[in-house]
Length: 146
Image (cartoon, rainbow, N blue to C red; front, side, top):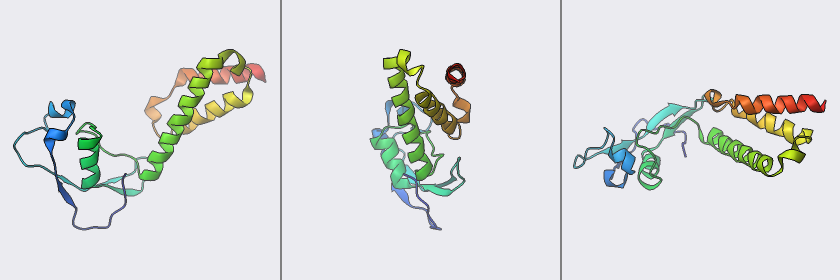
């Protein structure tokens, strides 16, 4: 995860490009035989504005162990990232419950309001990925129940 750093000298860690994902190996960044290093990358959390660092060691783990795209960059601090993961899990749970019991959940105002609130909170993490159709469906169902 990201962490704050006051180091004037960024950490450098050797990269093993052969451990990158196959997609990353097809990227412009892949240059076999040329030594590379990951270097601490400071950034600002996109959501809360906190000063963070994508450490060289975190980059090595992200690209070589987790096999993330070499072009992936951090945009959230650790706290915002954890909150976004919790929201995604809660949204997935609501979608699963809806798929299993749509007929009874259409009349459950607490469930519908809770789901709508989760979708509304998620907008602060990814405003460009709003589920407008689902929001409108939930609002419509809640209007019918009032």
